[in-house]
Length: 243
Image (cartoon, rainbow, N blue to C red; front, side, top):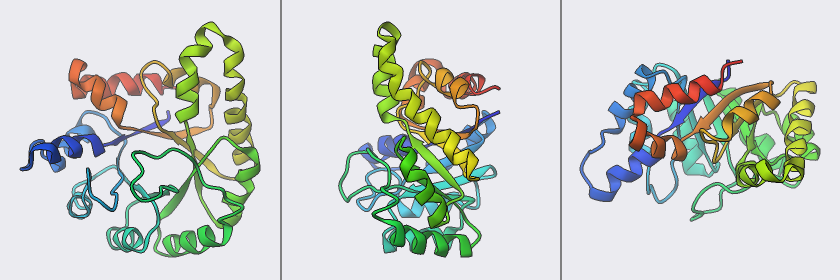
């Protein structure tokens, strides 16, 4: 079964909106695991507008499943990751101040930079995944740079999914995801996915990308939890990921 890593950034956004410690991020992470999450994902940004560097340090000894830290590999970010040593680090090409991740790496243009960063992380025993658009020609560069996995950026897929229900030709975009996944598998890269996956579009993606190892879901899951409750929502997502 494909693993579900719950991104808890939005819980931190809610906490930060009022100050104090409600909701308690450490308890949220523990509860997500109790309710069935296979991992916890955090994405600390330089302005700490949601997850803070302190949160990351405090979460490490408490997370009993897979801990995944994602972000742009600035010096401060890398220092944090090397200190905390999560099971996985996902590298994303976010410029400072971006609202949310919105594209994958150009593994050709940034090959030397990625190779240096990935080498440093893997020397510390950390599995490395890199955020990638559904572009077959960028997969080889991920492998050459030393990545263990790619995380397919699913924003464009999620945006087109509902249109494709009535206009099937719009799912031609999905061929790019399938081809990218096939190429990655052929050269020995595992596959993660994330961004705007939700209860409507996740099952289709899972069924057509059988190589999928892990999805990271935060925003939609937190929104669904408002209506369905956190425990029920996590189980709803996990049922969509069954082989």
